[in-house]
Image 1 (spheres, rainbow, N blue to C red):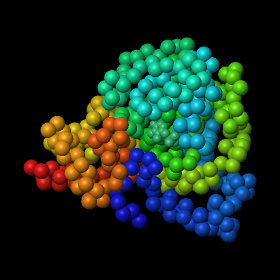
Image 2: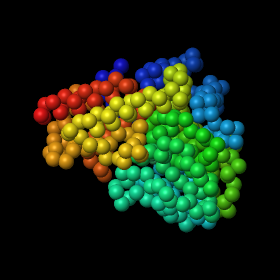
Image 3: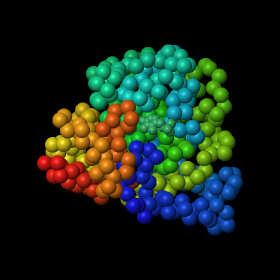
Image 4: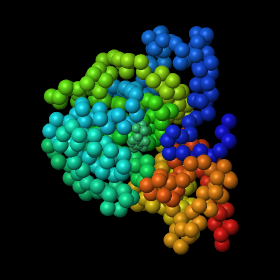
Amino acid sequence: MKKVHNFNAGPCVLPDQAIENSIEALKDFCGTGMSVIEVSHRSKEWGEVMDECRALWKELLNIPDTHEVLFLGGGASMQFLYVAMNFLENKAGYLETGVWAKKALKEAQGLGNAFAVASSADKTYSYIPKGYEIPSDLDYFHITTNNTIYGTEIKHDIDCPVPLIADMSSDIMSRPVDVSRYALIYGGAQKNVGPAGVAFAIVRKDALGKVSRYIPTMLDYRVHVDKGSMFNTPPVFPIFVMKETLKWLKGIGGVEAIHKINEEKAALLYDEIDRNSLFIGTAAKEDRSIMNVCFVMAPGHESLQDEFLEFAKGKGMAGIKGHRSVGGFRASIYNACPAESVKALVECMQEFERLKK
Ligand SMILES: *Cc1c(COP(=O)(O)O)cnc(C)c1O
């Protein structure tokens, strides 16, 4: 079905199987004679989709009973506000590792005392800060585990003396996570788990209800926990495609299996970047993301940037232009990006090097 090698950062490549099954459900949902976007969200058939989707999340990530998974509108950017609304009472600390982390911090600052505990802004967010101390009197500490724009990643669950909250928009389900260590994990679906239009939030239920402010109904996690993410009409089609995407992931062996594949794909591409005389990576080696691989032309070859983009496009590569704030190139190699696409990009870089020698 796929005609190009899709390296888009989000929305991005999704499994063929998920897209095909979603097309079928658009035509006829569960033999109802109606499209999945035409049935009542209160119907029995839709209820089963919600249950299956929740069950897949719980199984794939080993989510303990202390936590609930929610499906909400508004994207990850709306979750920035949910976080502060539901958890900020006195003060909150953020790890400032990029544009998304800064946007999350800004929403909290609009509601109270929130600040950056450490930042890597001094080197254009090309590394993850280390050796910082998390104050023990914070309501929560917020991290962005994968910095989609800069290609850096916090690859392990960190030790944290206060409730830990993580934006995992771009690396959720790419590696095993110990959910019990987090008060909240959230993100937009459109990188690793589905199409745009739905966000996920995995919240520890006993961490809620600790703030004194009035929380508007739609921004109160407790409401969505109580109503099973159906307080109002949920984004039905994005949730359906998410369920199909998770079914595909389960079918290929789950999170442990995809983690191994992701590490292999990333190694293939980083090895070529390190070997090829025309390119260099931009992220600190120890912090390199296995989801977003950022690189630029090596010193002395900067003028070849546009030519390489054109060359790669001619070879069927889509979406490798770097984010407008950093330039260069970025190959997003999410779960559904096949190893063949990564191999094709590596070959394309090798061919370009031969051409320029
Ligand atoms: C894409 C992204 C966001 C923004 O997601 P929206 O759903 O568009 O609001 C936030 N955080 C990270 C890490 C992202 O990659």
